[in-house]
Image (cartoon, rainbow, N blue to C red; front, side, top):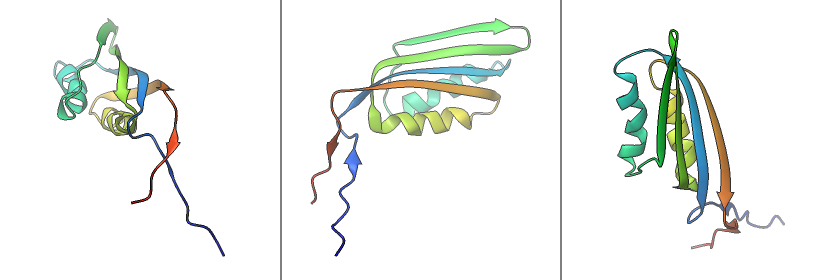
Length: 102
C-alpha cells in the first residue's frame, strides 16, 4: 500500500532574490515591472536601471521575499510586454519542512 504523499512547503520561508531583466526601451516599462511587487504588497530593496543602446538592464532585489511568492513574481515579470530576458537568482533562507496535514 502506498503511503500518503506529504509535500514540502516553503510557506513561512524567505528568499534573497535578484531579478535581472533585459528589455526594450519603453517609457511605460518600469511601472509595469514594479506592478507584480505592489500587487503583493512587496517593496523591493533595490531597483537599478541602465540604458545601453536600444535595451534596458534592470536589477530588482529583495533580501527577504516570501519564498512562496518568488515564482509568482518571476512569472509576471516574464510576461511583461517588452521583456526580452529574465534571470532570477534566489537563495532560500531558513529551513524547509514538511507541511502539516490538516
